[in-house]
Amino acid sequence: MPETYVSLGPEQVRDRSDKIGRGAAHDFTVSVVTAAAGFEVAKALAGAVSDALLEADMVLARGRLVGLDFLQTKAERAARGRLRRIDLRFRARVDDNQL
Image (cartoon, rainbow, N blue to C red):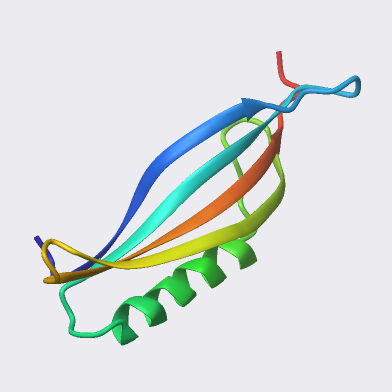
């Protein structure tokens, strides 16, 4: 396993359709994990991941991304203190009027 990596974690999707059209809210987690000492490396990478997601002009295979918001971060030691882990939570709002 690499010393530092990013992974896409759990996702929860809820219907957010309305009278105008179909849509969904996707709450998802992106995790940054590193064996580097301290949280400096993990925090720098977590900031870069957040910036990349929030500033990206995303094109979806289906539907249209109408909003992407940062929700929260949780930082912790993992694997009996050998790893540092930062979980970034986001919410994406997708409209999908394709049938």
